[in-house]
Length: 217
Image 1 (cartoon, rainbow, N blue to C red):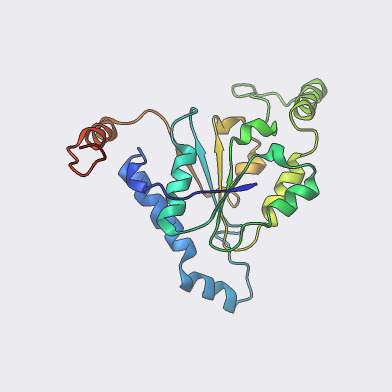
Image 2 (cartoon, one colour):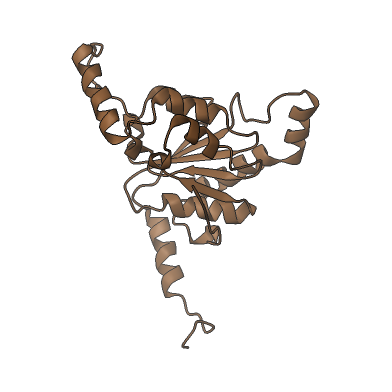
């Protein structure tokens, strides 16, 4: 696990303004001081819903998922901790790593697909997976990361310190186990896909605007 430098302005993230505004408003509500006091006065864990504030940023590679995490951290002046599940040597080690962020921090689980904790894509089929399906899936998980099971990951997530913003990035959320992304663990899923015409225009204007203060001018 390492801390990323959170210095990128949110304005340079090429995402629809409505989506960015919603993210800012949600995180701001979750971290508001009055919310923390309300939970504290009732001796309740300071978490959104029943767990914490969880996000999934999904979409093709190189669409700005990690950059947006850095920009959000800079916007709120939060520390940003980033890791891949493949860094964990064991489930106990994973749980220990998850204790590094504290209240007001963002924990980024980058490229959750690479952990191998996925489900077989059986959309369009009514049948339940048979023993052979399960055996094949378990073999795949062991080949990718034999140290971390789905149960171990869920246990580590559920033991996160109060007041944490958890963000997982993923290419295909439908490939993940439903227990991992169910409401209560994940509050919102945000698509990072092809930009709209409005966003494309803002990119062009930002990159080609006349800036007399730019170096070399």
